[in-house]
Length: 188
Length: 108
Image (cartoon, rainbow over all chains, first blue to last red; front, side, top):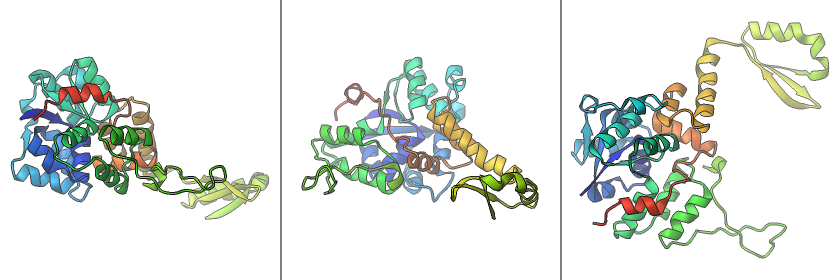
């Protein structure tokens, strides 16, 4: 199985979307201890329980921070210890990093580390027939107060061959027509 | 909490200061609408309010990572992501090149 070195954001995102178990069947996912700590420090935080359970079941491999040779560049650019450990490990072992945070992804690029995000993982799961669709994940994120821009939601759905779920809205300019209703931050 | 109108502020500066000294908030209104809140400048305000606001600004401007922002804001990572979500900060990278990323994910 392909190995991914995961940051906290995607782990939480996939866990909240209830696809963590399926992801761990499709990929070998490795997390630095600092990343795991960030995910489960608050046991009641969204996504924390399935992540802790996956560690207990040895489905998620935890790498002690001491086993990671720090890349000074990663630690010097405003990254937290978890993100820096992910990039350092991925750079050292030439593995793909699973990161969603823009800041860390930019630094990954500078370090020559290949990066994928939760969106690509969802699409791969769908393409492999392991999940029925990406729409339930988008709905779960919205229900938990995580925002994904309407544009990116539409792109993920289109690539997955799913249609955008539309709700009828009557506006002054479009009376009698249907307009898409997309999540706004304050509605999350 | 006491309310003052902007036009009367000059006559009430003493009260505003006394309120702050006694730990009370004051609302200052203009044309009947609240314009700003005067609040006591305490260590709590500094440690909670200012640090969260600073973290948000630095994360959104791309100068700080999310985990560093969460640490500065004093929130667990998952909750800080929700906090950012309420401000329209996307969970996923909107600039991601999905074709390139999918090419990195080897088929089963």
